[in-house]
Picture (cartoon, rainbow, N blue to C red):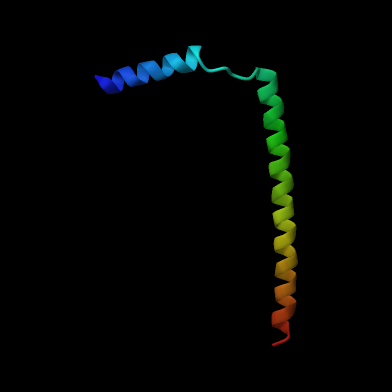
Length: 62
């Protein structure tokens, strides 16, 4: 019974006591996160390619 009460109380708290951001603000934040995720992925890809090219040239020496 305690688990059921805990779940009910949790949903009640989420409904009435948590202050949520507006839908517009959530959309803007999502766009910002998506853009920075893409930029970070491109940066990691570029660094990976540079290291790959460098190591390929290094191992050609042997």
